[in-house]
Length: 190
Image (cartoon, rainbow, N blue to C red; front, top):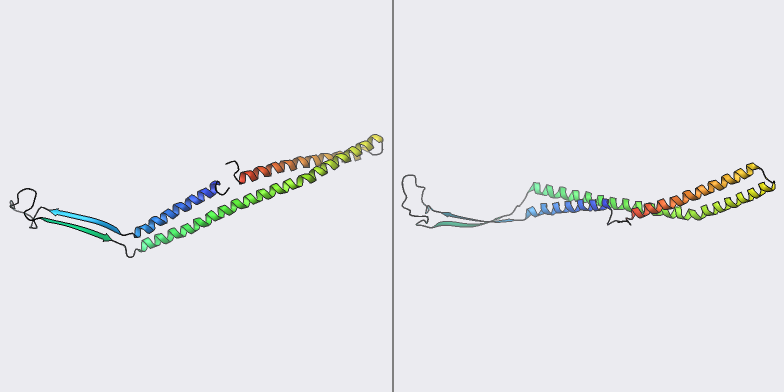
C-alpha cells in the first residue's frame, strides 16, 4: 500500500525533485575551467591610421598570439549559501510531509482492518440473536394457535424476529463494507 498509494508517491516525487534542486545548487560551487586564445594580425604594432602598414597577406611578419587557461572558483557567495540553506530546509519539510502521508495511510489501513474485524466478530452474535428470535416467534405462534397467548405477544415476537433479521442484514452489509474499505486502503486492486 505504501508503494502504490498516489499520495505517498506524489510526496516522494516532490522530495526527489527538491533533493535534485539542492544538488544543483551545491554544484554551483564547483570551479569553472576556461580556455582562451587569440591571434593578432597587427604584429604587435599600433593600428594603422594612415595608409598601408607594410604587411602583406594574412600572416603578420611578427607572430602575435596568446593562449590562456582560466580557473574560476567561488570563495564566498552569500546568495548561493542562502539558496542551499533554503533548499535543505524545504527538503526537511517535504521529508516530514512524506512521513505524515505514510502515517495517515497506515492509520487508515489500521482503522479499516479494525472495523472489519469488529464487524466480522459481531456476526456470530447477530446470527445467534436471529436464531433465538426465530425460536421465540415459533413458540409464541404455537402458543397463540393453542390459545394460550394473545395477539400482542405474537406481534411482539414477530417484531423482535424482524428486528433481529434486519440487524443481521445490517451486520453482513457492514462486513462487506469494511472488507471493501480495507482492500481499497491496502491497494489490493492495484
